[in-house]
Image (cartoon, rainbow, N blue to C red; front, side, top):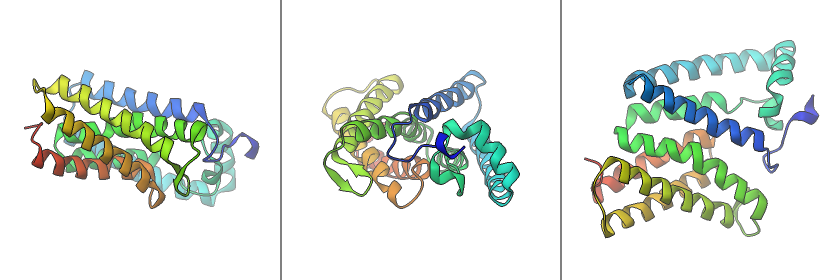
Length: 213
């Protein structure tokens, strides 16, 4: 079973596809059913707490752990065999972001998590030659910056009628915030750092360069 698990430095395309598709599915449900941010936020935090409880049980019960690895192994990493998986952190990061930040800022930070995180990882694994810190490369961070910049630009265009240097400047700083939040995953799970650090940074940025009112 262990040979089905991937390490952090492996390409692991299935996990990246799952990361993006599950996030997109969640956003689709949120919009289609016109759910409020607070409802989704509390629901995700409840799911996260249940997930952490299940993880504790899984890690203390070999039979349950073996069963989980059998079915979820293609989506998991090697270290998650004996430690908490990323799913509860994903739910907690998104849920907390929706409760803590304004809607436009929270959703933008969640977009960073859904798209910039796997893209940054992909480019870092394929092309990362210049290490910034252990496990993080300049190439991966640049890919994350460009992705966050483009996501911000598209999000602003969809939410406001603003154009010009103000928008470009906001997008540049948003890209930096997104890439920095991904680098901070060396201290905590990136499913937490990306939406929460991005949300906090974007909130400050929006106060300095007002885009979302």
